[in-house]
Image (cartoon, rainbow, N blue to C red; front, side):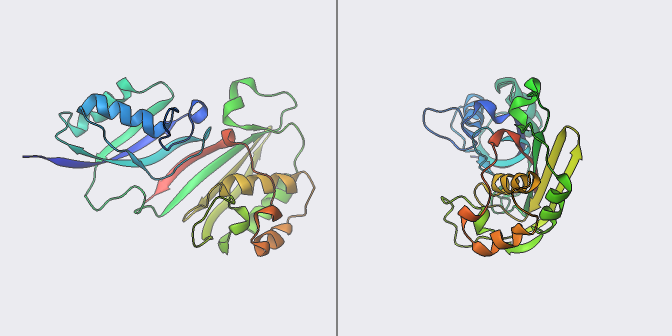
Length: 248
């Protein structure tokens, strides 16, 4: 008789070498690499369903995913160690737990927290180049902090969504938008009940435009009202972005 288990995974990865989370034929992806590891363990292809489809070059410290294992000989208690033996050095399974059938890594999500990191050193930080945006110019952090406060709450964030985002509603609730400065590092943390495609990176790019003096902080109001991607700032590079937490 077949026995099935639903397993929740917590996954960490450095996304530098990958073309994002989602499987793409012929390209290295995080999902594809995990599914190859499961196939070696279980003798069959297993779909790894991730909560967030991170872009190429984006990192994660707490990506969440689920898998359904049928007749897999590896006990749940041993899965973490077994998977980590098979995975490359830039992907690690940080947690494994058996969950009810009702759990879904995508539909059960209540919110996500992302952190974006910038470095304003004049010389590029060679050991951190793939984990930050090297922006070697001064930024007005107080102006960025003021603008970040204007983003809090339930609003239509269509101006911060990629033109490729075709979801019916662009209304989201941002519960945290915090800019912190420990020279030469600036971190921007954003938590929300959900994010549009490229929303965080577009917000970061806009905050940098404000920080460098192109716009005043209250420009955020006009950008939100425009509901047009062209009204906001440029997209920030992917390497500075890290998925920090998924809320269930």
